[in-house]
Length: 240
Image 1: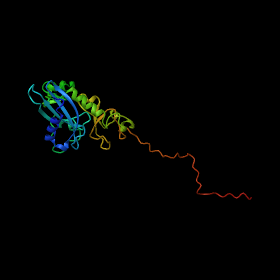
Image 2 (image 1 turned 90 degrees about the vertical axis):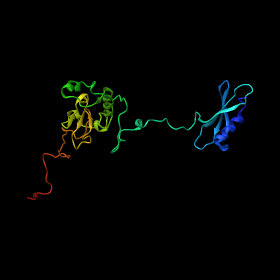
Image 3 (image 1 turned 90 degrees about the horizontal axis):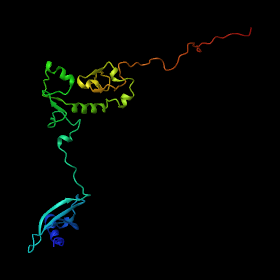
Image 4 (image 1 turned 30 degrees about the vertical axis):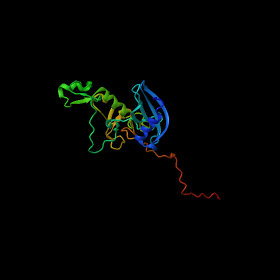
């Protein structure tokens, strides 16, 4: 009786969606011993691959088949909305504007409690002497994420500028090393002419504004040691 209740299921779907929105019967599958679900094509614009699913049930001998539920369900080829992503995970670098506030994630692994442990030996050595003064500081995971991001940026060692540079930032007079664990590989450029001025740069980054760059000012065309002046002619009389 449950398998044959196609007309009952269709009537329930049409009552829910309208006659013009319910298409052909495309399948049926069992839910349990006393219920099955009939599927009908959904004719709604924008709902390609969706089906009206009507579940009918049977309570036992002497009871009529009844409708339990009518829902619209996506099929394998259905057009569905992308998986929802929380707003704080959708924000990307550069999205923050003037006046915007972006608090860190709850239990952000990039930060740890400063009064527990800074996780940076360079800070721990002087922590008792100067006091940290901050509630939280970067964890090891936070430092590694930042280091990887900086190293692969436009101011990293594999950028086009760095590969064409005459020397690395580590040997440049404008390179200012940062403190702490980052100092082994990163510094700040202090050359106003350089494209990286004011940015964190990798020690192996470089540009054409290196402090040791020397420009060859010799003439492009070689000049001979002996010069002939052909603008003035000396006439010699050989008739005698």
